[in-house]
Length: 337
Image 1: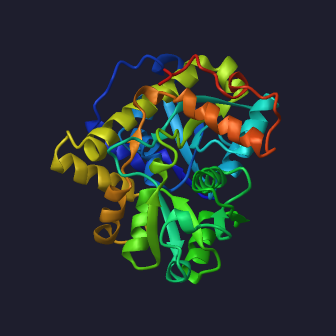
Image 2: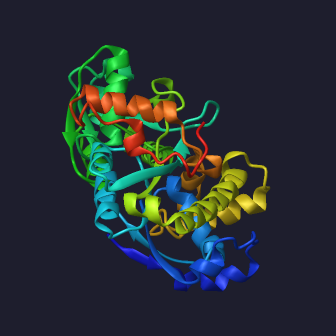
């Protein structure tokens, strides 16, 4: 887990476009820790940071980076992070049920017509016949933890195909990648910037699309502590305004591609500071562009998808049957879609 302070980015703020600083007078220099993964899907936070949108709102942001969703939920509940973007997990839902966390908006979404998450087979499994999700029966399916988004996706895919799979928890995305390359696990599903990069390097095979099994899937959400949601409304609204501006820039540059070629290249360079930063830009660029999925406008939240995920967690015995969407979501902050 590493941190990245906003101070190193201050030189970029002068040219940033600004909106009325509705939150800034009351929130000037409000320090805030934002949890993230080094994924293209977390770009809205990176853009808001680099282009000064958080600063416009009076927020002094520091990033804390994680390897998986559930540890991020624990960090929000404990106060080690203030806001974060991650997939709904059993851990997040259970913490919400205990009054520790609240989902306040939506982020990454599967959308028809936009290339989304991929279903992967290891090369060894592919050569042994795993050439489509229909052949998943009895295979080892990689997940970070039980109750993770990977568990949800794998279970829904297997159920749609009428087969059973064996879930293998490996805790971190990096460990899953290593296991896929070595053939220790047979299958996995992951965002396109990772999936296409691995497949392009010949390390795995793409055998399907998650959207074919879970259309309109609300992949990630914006969440915070229940205390922030209930008692820090101005701060929470300021965070969401800045985050949404970052999402708008990202979508225009790399999803809708309405901002022009130069803006797209600038966006990739910005994201490269956080995603594949250990690779030369020339090698990272294609993967970052390939990872551009929709980040919901105004942090809109697909409640139908959220409810489907809750229903699945309950069916698997991962959360209490009594937990409702109202326990998980504070719907007063963002529109529902």
